[in-house]
Length: 129
Image (tube, rainbow, N blue to C red; front, side):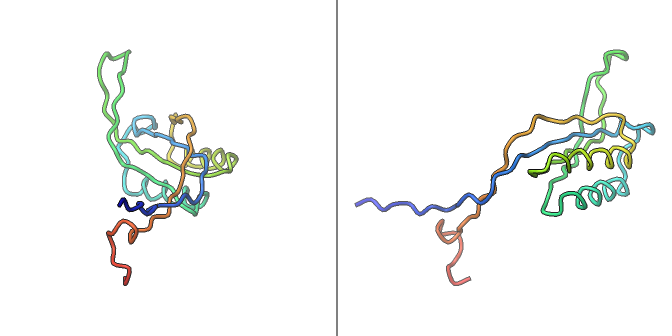
């Protein structure tokens, strides 16, 4: 006899997801991001998207064809799920001005789906907790 598997997750919401990449060398100072810059980015983003966002700190690379060399830079990837594209435009304008970004890379929008998980269905958590 085969037992049916319990469904461990149920889809909650689905929204357009926007991804932006900013690099520290695309600023007039060309310097790495400081904690103050990260705080500014998080505060501005939280004002526009209080339900959540993701900021990933990383090192980026790009090829400078004029200098003929690979350039490394401090960078940030910002992922936002929202159904309000006008908020994206307003956020982008404020963020670019505050961080003095000369450019920003915007990836093609995708879809984000939130899943509510039931860990007890997976046998991972005691139902008494």
